[in-house]
Length: 395
Image 1 (cartoon, rainbow, N blue to C red):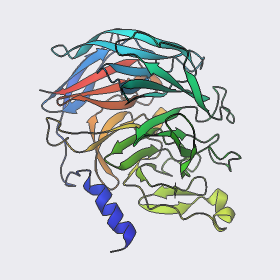
Image 2 (cartoon, rainbow, N blue to C red):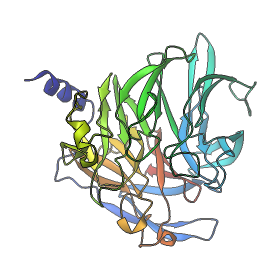
Image 3 (cartoon, one colour):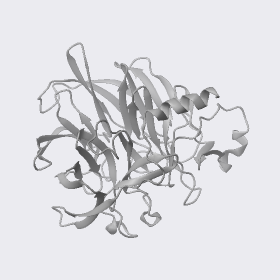
């Protein structure tokens, strides 16, 4: 068997896949929000759904602190990209499946998409990724605000083309593995030849920000990063402008020094295809494109956060990857707006769905961003459209 085939088999062995015929039986549950919105969602049978927190603005990614507390980033709104926050979800009530309060931990940040914690030699640290920089803070367990101004350990390109909000891809995603930081930096454009090395890539660096180097390239916008064992998984969004069904958005494993195609190639139905706008360039000497990723989503589904379930109470969900599909900005495309479970190559089934109930933005009741396994029976999902944290739990 070829080496790449062996590696792919080993990677996929870490993730269980449902038989193609298996489907999750769903049931309807009513949702009532404090802003007078009332609608119905679909969840797996044997589960229930509650509103764990609401009244947030644009909650994005979760992060569990060393002291067990839960934080979530909040991007404020699209009119002002300098008022982002890091929020503390405090006072978890297991009986009610909700948080007692939401407290501001940090404010006046530029698009703080993701934070991550790390503990070493008895000290804990908080890393905050903004569009333009990565800042490291000392973290004191139980604190209600940072204990100091922090230290900027990396800077990122912060401009973009034709997007008044500050760039085509202005979020930075973070993860830590084996004492290395990994930062995803999206492209400055839809499809172009970048002039800077640290664009459309994942950067690896030391925990103090030193030694930054390219870890993977050709990733137009890899917003979701998640380690399963020693394998890094990422969600990546394909380019716009090639039609309603091309190219697919992708869930893929990331190999060190791997090249994932953008802008010259894209993935479509388990094939790597040359982008017609870059065909001349594609014929020149370019790095070999990695194999197609495990799952291609419908174009413009916008996959963001992902989570691998470990020792979850429902065996149909346990040891599977869940992905939050944020949904197309063009509602009429009817793409995404749900949390799905990966069942195989290019196949997935809904786990939390029903947010999109028509062809207008007024009929879109949520845009899932991140999914987190809170405990053995509980999942948390962020919705950055209506400012809600949902709790899905196994009865």
